[in-house]
Length: 68
Image 1 (tube, helix red, strand yellow):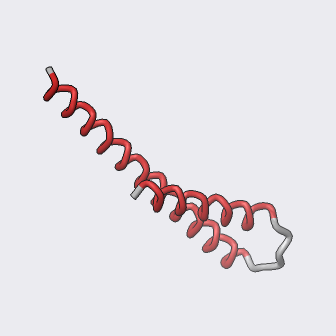
Image 2 (cartoon, helix red, strand yellow; image 1 turned 90 degrees about the vertical axis):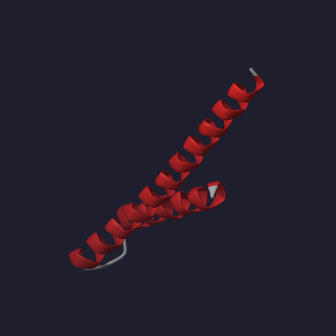
């Protein structure tokens, strides 16, 4: 899940850069839909990474409590 989160976050960042920095002629509606889609992809990637981090912290706490 960590690699999927990283991949989605990277794709979202690349799409954000394309929609904000490129000089492509497009209507405002197309731009806002693309920008919001790229934000959504980035947010999904970040959430997946946070969930993975929480699972890792929980597993570490369990392993520490078992050794004591």
